Length: 341
Ligand code: SF4
Image 1 (cartoon, rainbow, N blue to C red):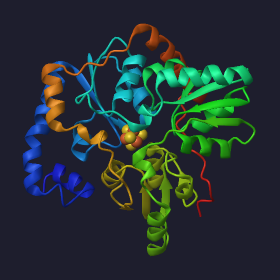
Image 2: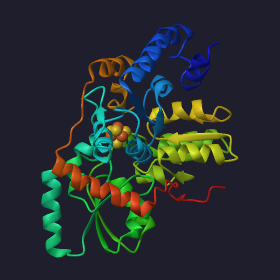
Image 3: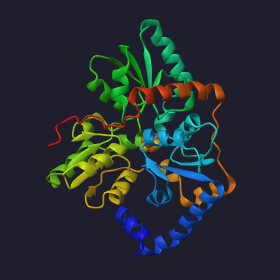
Image 4: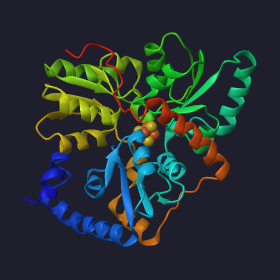
């Protein structure tokens, strides 16, 4: 068995058969060659297909990848294997690099739920009665919405970002589930939630989680804060995707349920091979638009380049830098909502 087959079959033995991996291996080699030729680095979000992890220079969550993108120095091209807002963030924090998104249709339902004109209107309306208002924007938004914000946050640092602000009233955009989680953890603030959600996480039900819990004694449930609150109530820890990987590595437990998009369960099975990961996950079709084939085409043709107008980029960058300042580049997982043991 080759190393690639061994790793990929841990993620999904039914899909990554010896025959399939034999087809994949030349594509992996081609991506590696093109990366060298084009002086490119490949950043991959934790929800990508398992074969993309094989050629990624870095994998991570939104915060981790934003920081990696900012740190890219030697390469000329960043190929972003994720969705559009993530590639935009990479361009904003490292404007001198060419940033490519292999499939321009890789969007995000959550980012789409908050358009810049609607956000602008809501901010103006609230400022009439709430002069103390601060606008905190989850990174799952367009550059235009980030540009309207005081500070950005990720699922991994939303609580500490909100806690750090002197303002009492916070407009939290766009995820209502993450907003509720922040409100529970920072009760002295008045959190006004935008009514958006990720349709992938919304599909995961408490019944499915409970059924797993009852069937597997000792199972640790790790839930992403974009999940519904009745799902979060069943979690041992509420953590970002990278927080789930850290948690599983450090925990004495052997069996876990990662309640988020399915790519993370694939990655956990590859990265933490001595532990067992069960699934109630759902697939994000936007994340899965990225394939080895379109990564190759992207590198060959240097397509599809992400650009952000300078004025928008400048203001969005300020909101992102404030997040980096507040968290000190701290990626500590969110506190658990119930004791771990
Ligand atoms: S999982 Fe949800 S929030 Fe993440 S990219 Fe897909 S639709 Fe957007």
